[in-house]
Length: 299
Image (cartoon, rainbow, N blue to C red; front, side, top):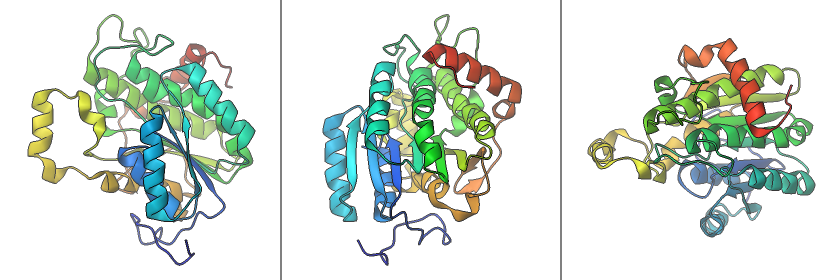
């Protein structure tokens, strides 16, 4: 692909940003906004590593993206965020086989699913959306630091405003609401972003969280019939996966974010998150509890 080729972009300033020689790793890049994010960044010349649980879908996505972008440096590797053993094995492969990770996009997630637990006994949404990415980031962080300037992007949601961190029942064993559990996991994404940004000051690694918008993807497959019908009714007001990917792309490439870190974005602009998401005491406590839950010592 020639240097003059352009990728779709959320802003004019970012439209011509190239990523030649850079490596992007994103979770859940086989479908939805993850795949569209990968498509855009591949067209910018980046080496793309798609991490996903379904290798059949992942392989099909890579074939499509290579054909569309003309970029053959796109690969898929197996990662199950609902299993810390899989996360550790995946991270070991990346650390052994890759020279750099310039952009890490924690994109994969589950939404409002029936109650279930991960392989390690965590409530599925909190386990995948927060703890899985928390552990993955920890395991890859040395490589990311060596690749600086680098960026870490956590895909959250405006649903964080419906959540609270229930430290007495993080795994929803006493009671379960799929909406509240989802909100808790998305709130955790933002609190993680803010605390991580503090710990990475001076390293050349910046961190961002974002709301992609109400996007028409497979993520809503667990929504009940009434809610799903409402989404169809308001189809005009929801975003396509390509539109939903734009804020992830913005956080990955926008030059104006080089000196910013720890902030929350929506529609390619910095916006305010909830008061709960700005609570420094909660962020630190969640960090410490998360370390214990996944068995790491991350100071």
